[in-house]
Amino acid sequence: MLKSQHLKQKGGGSSGAPPWDKSHFSPSPPSTDQISPSPSKASTSSFGTSEVSTMNSSWTNDDHEEEEFEYSVCSVCQNKRPSTRLKQLDFNYTELYHATDGFSSDNFLSEGGFGSVYEGELNIHGGLKVAIKQHKDASFQGEKEFKSEVNVLSMARHPNVVMLLGSCSEGTHRLLVYEFVCFGSLDQHLSTATENPNPLTWDKRIKIALGAARGDFGLARTGCDDTDETSVVGTLGYVAPEYAECGKVSRKTDVYSFGVVLLQLITGCKTKEKKFDGKTLVEWARPLLEDQNYPDLIDERIVDSPDVQVFQLYLMVRLAEGCLKKDPTKRYTMAYVVKQLERIMGGNNTSSRDGRKC
Image 1 (cartoon, rainbow, N blue to C red):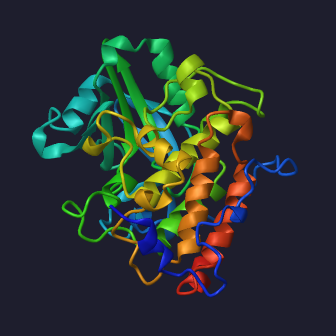
Image 2 (cartoon, rainbow, N blue to C red):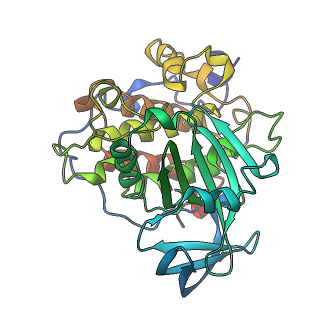
């Protein structure tokens, strides 16, 4: 576990001011910053990069009408990747069963609280690789709730967010079909050293955070402003307290979810890990945040990295804390988040010039 003194000796500067000086951040969201920024050029993480060239094509399948879409070719695995999906596809269970060879262990990718994910190949436009998420407790989720979840997930449009292509709701089966990303998920790149000896660098973590923050996506896009809300089914570990209590979302719910992502980038942890003793990442981290025990939150694998400055770690932790306030009205706005992340990136002397290309 990291100690405060260890961090104080690194990058503290000559001013004599403690590196964890609270004056860096305001205690509450700025009242003059109420409008989220429009989408801008976001950094695409190294595990989601594809060729620039795109092609207009169509999805053809015996079970589906022809669907026009644009796709790019992944520079790593050379598989087709949809870059624009114009319409959600409804799949039947049989075709998804065959696409995964009967959900065989050879096609197994990962498992979480929601269920299992399998690699598959659909008979669409000569073969399209996909990731199929099979809900574990599908029998407890009704048709209406599942369709609501699909509607919400389909709102996401961002280079760092996996695209939902379609779904299957048949009998007790509830499945989601996503584009296949050969380099894996953020969770996999933030996994423990035994699983991943080359974790994401601090510079890449900042770029991912800023790229995601600049994107205009999330649960709240089902509404028009802060007061518009809708009932949806979310992903455990990322949802805000007010959602868990009443199933409603707003733009500040998105801010909370983004705060969870920031916390993942800071700690190098998934939203659920054994060391949390059944708690979520936020539940585990909140006492450390409240006690200002910030050093114990930092991923040990990056703290000694030459591209890390203490003030950056401090700002990132404080930013996550401001996004994760239990009271939605006290959370930062995304515009404020973007501004602070740009400040953090600008302070990265070893790579700030590259960072500004995002």
